[in-house]
Image (tube, rainbow, N blue to C red; front, side, top):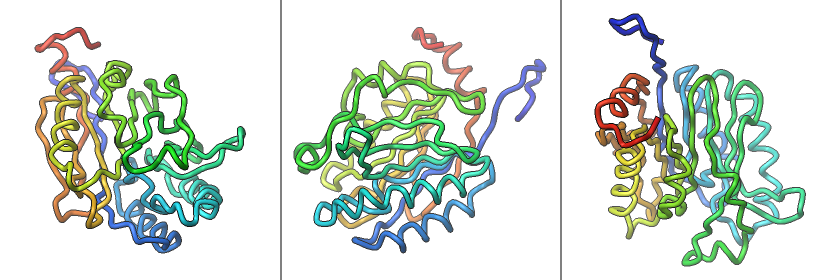
Length: 252
């Protein structure tokens, strides 16, 4: 935490976007690699893992992928500590339907979770997953910070941008097709500018995905991972407050 010249306190905290190569059908290896990456981030970092980075969309072994959600959850509950870690997983919920679920881990708890609402039909997701409920897309607070979360394809829907107005940070785990790379870059940049917030977007770095993980400031200044597996940029609350004060578009 820092103190401004006027004596007001502002939160500062490391943001980390991962550009992770997910190995097909290698759940244990992927989880082990991610564990090492997370352990090397600052102890209070906010870390976003790419969408389904551990299992991938393993439709050929869907039951195995769904069962592995418990292993992922147990591992990240133990690993997060003071970090805020965001991961998605294939999970069967109490209604016996399978969802693409995002979970936020902090201090040994799942402090927020939501299932993907807008499934990517072009990729056949609707043939395997049930859609989540729209009311799960909502602001949530952890350690004095307001967060919003959208899973991959959901960033194309403007109604969700409005639901996340007022977020300090929007978290985006993604597995975005390489042919639509510019769409991913443009949308994540625009979301930060429109909502005057930080955006942390993490995509897999596989041959068929963008690899354009990055962190965008409320002013729209982007830093992309490139060849850096884990990019770290400080969240500065002062920058959010400054944008909303001087370019007042009604976001508080």
